[in-house]
Amino acid sequence: MTNTSRTQKNHDSSDDDAPANGRPSTMEVLRHARAQFTELTGLTAEAVSSFDRTEDGWTLQIEVLELARVPDTMSLLATYEVDLATDGELTGYRRVRRYERGRADARTGGRS
Image 1 (tube, rainbow, N blue to C red):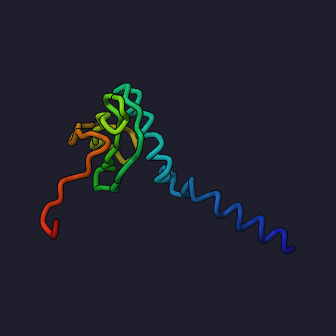
Image 2 (image 1 turned 45 degrees about the vertical axis):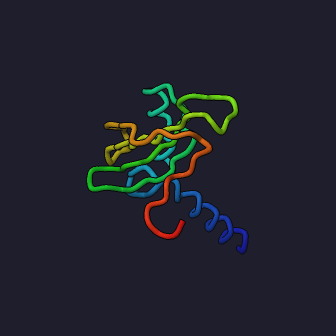
């Protein structure tokens, strides 16, 4: 009987990736968005640096390598804002930032 309750708990935790309401899970949306973005642009997503569920779907910030250089710290990366419908399908994207890998964002305010 103890094994049954453990099995039930394990089964319940695996359902987190597939919600009962039929909508894709957050991780499914993020994986699918990265794949769609790569297919459309030919750029490989290095990371999803932020995501937010909106009234119309999702908005993500995806970091990509745009131009590889030597040394790697001089490579050019970019941040793309990606919009998704509620079902996770990509509806638009735009580059919002381009920067060298080795550069930090400039500080705005505060102590230097």
